[in-house]
Image (tube, rainbow, N blue to C red; front, top):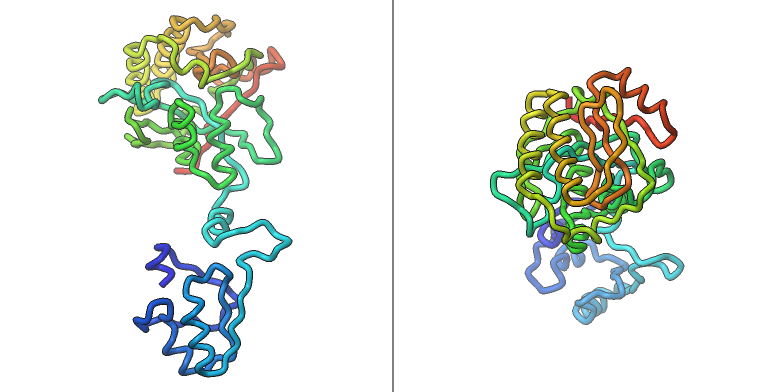
Length: 310
């Protein structure tokens, strides 16, 4: 019956025996077994919809009919669904950077044949340990939703922004998505080729994606960046990925964002989000150059791809 009602199975150690109800009486699918073992007690929750027929069944064999609250009064009400959700909720989650196609995950800007390319990153975050600046273009709202047992896609779309943050943070690794109203994965791969190549620069400028969602921008150029990033990821080519990132940055400058500081030996850089501030992604051809950039200022930090597939 649990499968029929909720389409899932469960297992609870304190239960000694479970029987399958096969009686057709409404609300009394367990009736035949109950009468066979002549149970002493029938326990129901306070919201039981079949109280009258169950009381009559208990009276028939002299069993006690006991009503319990769904949740003891000293606790916040819970449901079996919320318990399962909490069990499945991870303790940590990655954040994300995107390389090309940003804004084409917003339903009203979706384009057939266009792509959004992004990557889950580490260090990861938890509800108690968040080592990045807040609201800074790294998909923090998507990670926060996941850490609280929620999907996040619906809430992002309700804010008028795109679905890419919760989608990549839930999916992990490096992903290429088709531009559409909902997440559609084109292909996924691990991010080994990105190890030692990525860094963040904190701009110390407030980041506000919803507040900039309706700005005028060059969506043709953004689409070109997404297509170029897709090819670069497919070929594991850092220089091509740098070129795609540079196309994304060119679109951001056309929109009116401030110029980012140059970095020696950097093959491409861009703002991580569309909110005109927060973090910027810098891509380098070699680890030594990335590490030198990180050491050059306190506002710079190294990141790595978060990899779950091999």
